[in-house]
Amino acid sequence: LIVGDTATMGSTLAVTGGTTLASTLAVTGASTLADNLTVSKIADMKSTLIVGNAATMGSTLAVTGGATLASTLAVTGASTLSDNLTVSKATDLKSTLNVDEAATIGSTLAVTGGATLASTLDVTGASTLSDTLTVNKSTDLKSTLNVGDSANFSNTVDVVGDANMHSILTVTGSTHLN
Image (cartoon, rainbow, N blue to C red; front, side, top):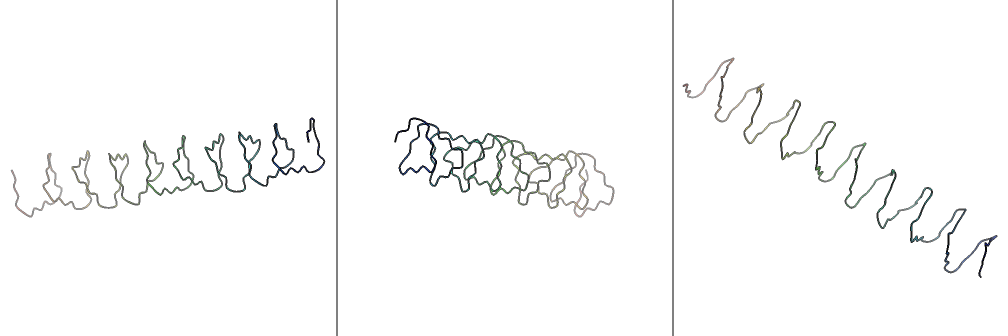
């Protein structure tokens, strides 16, 4: 059958073998495909694409506008974000968090395990320690040291300037005054 001009079918066109179209296929109503659809070149969708089951991309998925996910995003490989990441609820990280540049925390930082700092800790406000402070090397205090309870020294105490005692001085051992 060779048709040289426009042809109109008044009923169903059934083709039992393969079909090759050498130009555009225009369909004005809904279309149903009962098997796979293979597209060799760009597919240009002018409206919403609705996928009822899982979708597999064999290469990069490029989204030029915003993307909204209504459920979990699972990524099995490394992920790179080229702009800010904003998270509006709690976030659980199951491994190490590496931050290569400065980090700003807008509220309390709560650490439930030990914390190791490899450089200086600079605190601009008051600090409260609820347990023992152990310092393994010398300590420089640039202002007054106030001790609200007893102070025990297990080695020599050197006072370079004047020492003022405002109460009783008790010595339990030999004393040398020069």
